[in-house]
Length: 348
Image (spheres, rainbow, N blue to C red):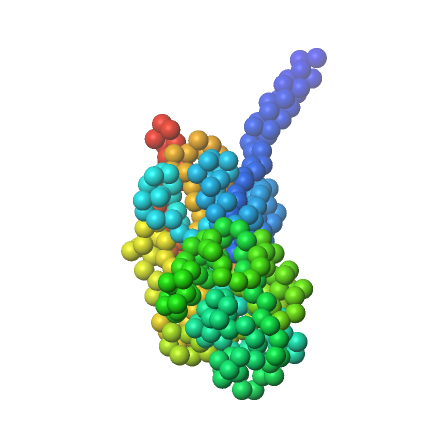
């Protein structure tokens, strides 16, 4: 009798110890930029498979991501438009880059293959200003003597939502076209001179895919996934380059991460023979005072895991992983800046 009772007690203690050691899966929420959505989605799937923890990320645009993290309705925000030092301080936010990619012009012109059409920044600006309205315009034909172009009106497609992709695109156009800078300028949202809007990279890709003789701009992974024809662009050094990991990496090679507030480096129109002109880092935003330590620690573990184990996945989707020295710096910032209300560090 005593032996049976002892066995039951031993079993109960063993089961109790086992159940205590099993941690419940954590679910965190993020929202923002559509530019990195393809890689965040794949990383999240692989991270969940390995750890059981879930990252629910909504692709709502950089403006929405900034608004939601400021309002504390998500665990992390994401933006391709880096916040200024003043805005970060005002909202008590921490900002860090997560991955690098490229924005590409995409076209739907019968017979024109991916990478075949050549455009310069000045010509792109004139198209989006409505100054060049036909595909067989002399300025386009001058760059494309070997391409048959139709005498058809150009249909311009742009983002309708507040977008970091738009920030990078308009920032680039402002650097290469004085006319664009004066009349339109740069920002997540601008007053477009011509064209129609699509929501998210997804919406622009869908419109360009459906509308003959159209041109838009999307993150490169969306161009590939939707079988869209991208164009080459003449870069700052005067070379026509294709969008690819090599050209994105070339643009990011000399970035001064430490010199920018919140590591908010803008990589458009960078010098270099191989540099893609509309390269961008995408950024994560966190509240510095951590109200939900378990969730935020999981966010940090997710990006730590992605930088250690997700480089090949990023490359497969034509993103450029951050250099190791940059990710090591970011981890140091996490440890220093992210604190609970009682001053405890979330990352150690």
